[in-house]
Image (cartoon, rainbow, N blue to C red):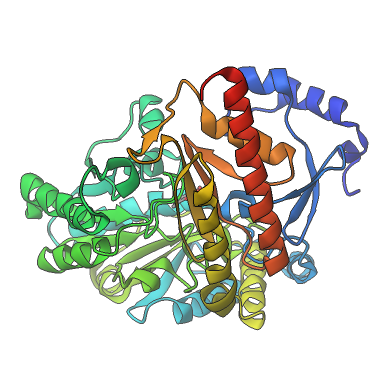
Length: 462
Ligand SMILES: Cc1ncc(COP(=O)(O)O)c(C=O)c1O
């Protein structure tokens, strides 16, 4: 036990939580009634709650604990770095060894034309940074009217004002008067939900051409950039049809606008490449990163910047009036460096690409045999299933039934963290997951589906 509060029993912890703790993305009324699940320790791909239940973490925390839990090497470097230099900033012409080493390492992993990194504290801060960089770039180039950034409905780019505005989550926009001006959203390449009678390939082209339409409507001279996740994560794990990214690439090559590939989830191995952009052949100007860069052991994010942008900043940009107290934090940087070493030494990128990724995807496909599952899809170690009332017509149960939440709760109660996005169940386990653990994940996912079906039958919904 590392903290006094961990000696308290579950009820006492929940009472403290209810009295004092405001949770992110939570309905506090129902949370207070039920009481939060207290997670007290973790090892490998498993977490334990305060009642002693072991749960397979099918979401790697929030898509971030890529190397799994309990990697002592990261704790050791954090301790050593805290003793050596616990904090210093990179403002005012300073730097320190861990941050410059980390920038070098990340540049070496990024696509060849991207060699500079700006550090932040999170994925959201990375996207706030990107918005400012994009507009600064065009302003420095003498084209400040190139201001609008095009994002996608249901895209997720974080929860700060700029992050939530760039994202296309309606529920987030409703709170706080978002999006801010100068952001336009186009439809997502979500074939299962929105493809209608089109084949996935035809729909992929159609969805990509929405970008061209938007550029022409707004005017190429007013569009600054396009932002998208290579695989849309929080917005239902949308695996784009095979035609989507090639068509987007064609459009981006035709018009003078910048490409922002949000790699916060896809980065650091999730697709079986270091970055999702490499998986799909995207040529970004900016790659916001976070999560897997430290495997969540320390909060840290960043923006990898292309040479064409970095050169403009250096030559003509002057002072870039932007930065965070914790930009390039030395302890976070040291932990990130060690995390990258672990990923390399364990050969995790190759493991995801050629071994555990294909293994998980093949097993995941078997879930389609369940009467509730309309589609199973995935890439590398990220996957989704669609829960449906009718497989043939791809008809969902909808908000009133709340099947996703029912399935999620039953899944967690029976030993597996799956996440619900509406009627879609998603997973994104640690990259170190073994074959046996994948087998367990699939068995538990199937059990959650069975229990969900029984629940719906008892309610008379099916
Ligand atoms: C694609 C993407 N971008 C940005 C973010 C925001 O990152 P953070 O929660 O670290 O601010 C997330 C978080 O899930 C994400 O999935």
